[in-house]
Structure formats: C-alpha cells, structure tokens
Length: 212
Picture 1 (spheres, rainbow, N blue to C red):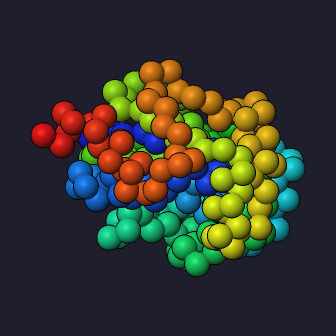
Picture 2 (cartoon, rainbow, N blue to C red):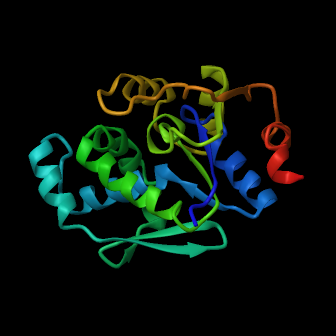
C-alpha cells in the first residue's frame, strides 16, 4: 500500500532538515533528505574524477553506479558501490559540486526514482528543493520553508559550512531542470524569527488530520 508523503521544500539553510526530522519523529514517519542523495552522487563523481560539466560523461557514469539504501534510526543511510557515503556528505568539495551535478536531468531522474520507490512502502517526511513541485506533486501535504538571506547565511556559518547561500539560491532557482520554486498549494512558513520547536509545531498544526 503506498505511503503518505509530507513534502518540505525550501532554499539552503531554511531549516528543512531539522524540521523534517522533528516532524517525522513526531508522526512516526521515515525521514528522507533528498539532498543526501545528491550529495552522495556528488561525492561519487568527485571520487571517480567526473567533472560534472559534460552531460554525456555524467550519464555514462551514473548508469554504472549502484546506490544502496539502508534504513537507520536517523533516516536513510546511502552507500555508493558498497561504500558508505555518510562521512563525506558535508565535505566542502561535495557542497561545491552538488548543485552543478543536480542540474543534469539524468541525475535527477535517478534520484527521483529512488525517492518514489521509498513511498511505495513507507510514510515519509521528505525534504528538498522540488519534492512538492516535481517528485510528489500530488501529495496533499506540502510545505515551503524560507528565511531571510541574512538569517540563512548566519545559520550556514554557524554550521561551519563554506558554501554561499546566495550562490546556491541562484543555481537552484535558475537551473533548467526542476528549479527551486514554491509548489502549488504549499503552506509557506517564514522561519526567520522562529526556533526549531516553533517551526515543527507550525507544521504539525497544519497536519492535524495526521496527528489526531
């Protein structure tokens, strides 16, 4: 029986991951970060010396890759060709590569197939940049989290991240394939002046039919 999907989209450092993890824990759903899939692919591409600039080369490379999903208490653990990608997902080089690699349709098609496969047997809280608009456009539960550019930059700096929020926004919003946008019918929540508990509570308030 297909599972229920709560889609939580938004730009970098809007709070998607932490909020999605908290909502999933409250509902007993499986937490999934689509960004982890793209980062795993980006790490693999860097490891295999794929530059991410030629679509034909990327397509040949990705067809030969084996991405394995394992459920864990924290959500999904990803292995590429039998090697756990988790320790590498926050590498600065991966952060610099991920938006470029994710712009290729063949990469997005591969990741989306894995994401949709999870929904065949799980209730999901899935966060990303095109979950409600492209991956699961028919889901009843869509959210778009946002915050001011200044606040998002502050959050990224606090995390020790080195990638530019403004640059990530520009790449994500202007790419030809599945650009970052507010999904039709999504509830928009500005997290600039809310703490984590406040945002989770706001999402759960809109999901009363799932929590009652």
